[in-house]
Amino acid sequence: MADPMKATLFICRAHGANPLALRTLLKDPRVAHSELMPSCCSPEGQDQIALHLKAGTTQALVVAGCSPKHLSRYQEMAGAAGVPLARVAVVPASACKSPAMTDLALSRVLDPRASLSAPERASERLLLVGDGISADQALRQAVEEGIEHLRMTSSEVLTEGNRLIGGPNDFILECGEEMHRFGAALLAMDMHIEVHRERLSEAPGTALLLWGGEECLEAFWTELGQLRNGKTYVIAQETPFPGANELLYADAQGHGMTFLRSAQAEVRSGGVMVHDEHLDEDVLLPVGQVIIVRSSRPPEAASLLRLFGLPMDHRSAEMEPGRSGMPGVYLAGSAYTEFAGPDATMAARAAVVAIASEMKGPQVTVPLARVDPEKCSLCLTCLRMCPYQAPQVLEDKMSISLLRCQGCGLCVSICPSQAIEMPPADMRFVIGGVSK
Image 1 (cartoon, rainbow, N blue to C red):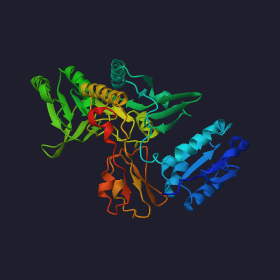
Image 2: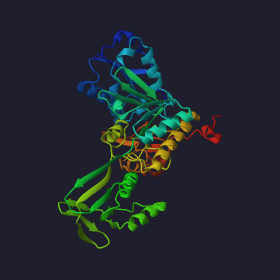
Image 3: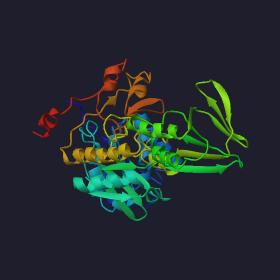
Image 4: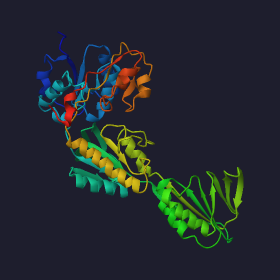
């Protein structure tokens, strides 16, 4: 029988923890090493903890009396030493008035099942973040689905000092003294549409430029419908008349409008210079007025993605509605997905339906992958191939993020060194959709 796992306990005094309240845990048989430090979160303290972890004499780490905001840093150090991230815990100073919370933290990090399964669902609340039509439609669907929800604007979430902790099934958004707990988040935001008009001269004629995707079509068609007098040139990179809207194209041609397909245009004092793709040459359109219909991503869209652990230029490309690739985080709206116009609102509703189905159904026990550092050759195959960006290199060692891993097993099958292992899935939760 394998020896029972043991943890290292560091007590941080920098935030007012009372070490006397924890004295009974210093000699706990589950604690292989305990140490009282002036400040665990200082550079000197972190160096000492990292050095102890690298010695390889512990299987778990508990830091009592420190601020929870340093958890990610302790997890990085543990991951570099081959300690699973689920076996790292921080107990804040406010919870160190008695040994109860620290004792609970020890039990959790030493639970042999802790590194094999995703955290249990602690909240069935949905946080809906965003403004505009997609967010409005998502809210209506949440009401229809009967799921508990909280809607916040992007500015409310991104207020200075706010921070996000936890992970899927148990997110916590700290807003000053308020703490909002939720199991999943839906970021719903649409592109900003702008119609720019510029008078170049008193010359007759108008150039209408479409510099945007499908989200701009309604505004573009509105402008097109108002141009019925005088010579009009319409410039777009792709056809703005898909499907049944060819009737609009026929009507515009009947009013003498000229259509050019071009990805390049330069506004000059004498008109608009475009590169005609059919003629393969530059053409100067002598017009006195220019109307440009374009879209732009709201600047706060990138900040929201970064807050929830996604790349700032990320767009959802998943087959399932709203999936972002980050567990517990869903995306809707033309700023985050390829859907626009009516499709964007339908996609936002579909994302909420998917979230509701997941929250109301039984929680599946998902097996998570683990890396054997002795076998790993750091070939980075798993890092490049994982669809959930779970593998990460910390201090020249590969580890798997417990928050990102979805137990798909792809990394296990493609690892050339066979350094990744995963326990069998618990199929009882899958058969018939109910737990047996």
